[in-house]
Length: 545
Ligand code: 16G
Ligand code: MG
Image (cartoon, rainbow, N blue to C red):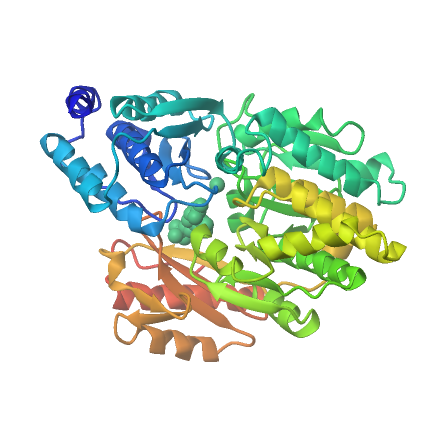
């Protein structure tokens, strides 16, 4: 067929470097930008097939999120704005690694296996972040779509969650919203102003928030959003990309891992601040106190704030809906303890990676999911949304229930349910703090984090580590889990786990304990155990102090 000739011809313009093998990882392909041209072209092909198969619009986002500017990456978005289904991740890996002269055969294999009707129309939405490599790489995606006869729409510079939103809007025929960046701003800002009506009069200081845009797309988009928020919020945007380098000593990942302020932000003690990551799908909050000490409010604190707010509203509305919080092994032990024992909500733990949390959250009427690193959102089941709508339209209920239903309705609208979204999460957090009349310090005081430390260890092959129990226990190599158990026993309130990274060639180590010294010592000792038992390479891990 003509399409395949075109694929061959075009594929020669996007050649695969000999011997390069890449894997569709936790969040798609991610590596140095100069190795990705052929991957992008081929993901354009795959997205076209996926669109034909699902008879729906598929998204392709070109970004490497919080990774350095020199890197890039790509992830595919399924029809309702979710991550690409895992059964197709294997096709992505096959297509990425197949030799140029085998490409058409690999495509035909997928078409046959999935019984794809090639006469079906295909539509692919493409977006990119601000990396210097993103323009040519997103063009390679568009070339791939065109080569297989698909239609594409290039959204240009958008945040990752904005593209997820567009795909969902398109495939729900506008039910989720209008598939434009303007439509996104309008939907979220309208919900925000409805919620803000329920806040008592706020001073300009209370409305003020400092945002670290990680020198990325989030900075551009939050500025665009600002004009829609009128006088409801006052933003100071730092690291807006005008000078600094993307994600360099700034952004949500830097702040969370280093537990320190980003470079380039000017704040006073007590000021409320937040950082986005490079594609604005993560957010963390923080402030410094009068002693200059840094206080982080990460994904766990955000999940606690949001789930407390929702639980209170459900009570006031008299709605019997099951609410759960989904976390990963990285969730601070104090947060899990608080959620289970004080708030008495269901807590579920899953493997790292958004798709795992997202799926787990779908099992509940209301599923709040957050990774400690600040990626998260809230999912409302269709049934839950319906009950909330019905109550909001019910004229026979008292004012308290009516108000709670109204707040729930607008909370649904402010949330990007397709994926974690720094801008949407920021607006929801700001609305909750305003409605509850809460300062960032009061929010922080809900519970105290256990001191913790994350380290990485280089090993010759990280796949020797296999885990179970949502990555909380290592099954292999032999003796590693026993060694960790023995080390953990030496400390108070201690916990530690190790897992192979899904995005970097390292093993990650997490430890928490009653003091920072203990957490640091435990993390170091566990690193040594990994180094010794799992084939460490290079120098032996050094103690932190
Ligand atoms: C990716 C994941 C993120 C996860 C991180 C873990 C998505 C969209 N992103 O960035 O959720 O926390 O990987 O990285 O799924 P690691 O496996 O290297 O620790
Ligand atoms: Mg990201």
